[in-house]
Image (cartoon, rainbow, N blue to C red; front, side):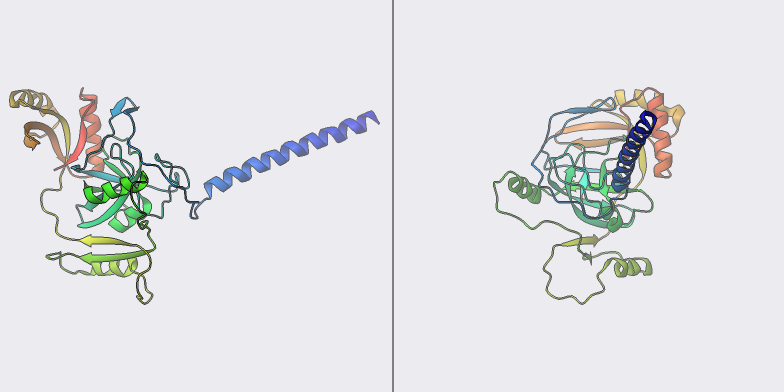
Length: 307
């Protein structure tokens, strides 16, 4: 009788443990398979204090004059349904972005320098933290800008000051509500003097446009603009920037063994800087390799730039 009772008890414990294990497995699988639309969560306005990631300090600040060229990446399934840095729920199927220092929320225009597409995007998260990336886009934003499959793109990012100020006022309760940007509909517009029509662009328009008739729009529209993008689109590793040219020349001499290098003058505000760059690299992957080489040679603050 005692043996039978012990057997029953052991079986019960085993059943309980098995049930717990199956429950944990089910929960784990559910997290991995989450692909629907996450529940919405109202985020807060946030600038934030300086923070350190992987040995690098970042300094969030309000900067309504921000413009930068560099490399964009995108993030999706791994973070889908999780909270963003300002408390919203990340939805990879909605246009949004992560930036390391801009206020959240902010509105930026991101332009793909290869295909001339540009898109207004709302910043509500922090990242990316790779030295060679300047902004991380949601999967939907990457699709609209045409680099989801490639994974990265050479881009220009510029803050839209007026809209960012209104967005900040709304998030802080200082303004009336504004329509929320969603990705339900997509419109592609060619600007005056835009690039000529070609089969690739035409097919993309058909793929991204809604096939249904076009009644009066009742939902916000993501407008992808296509216009010529001037200037160079080459990738360089910037090892440093100096106020005095002779210091830049000394660094350039030290970097010569790593490959072609140059000194580029740039005026920021009222000050002239001399930037020391190695390159150009033929691709983003080659740029990453060159960046690692420069860092390993004793320049830990080196980064990729697009000039």
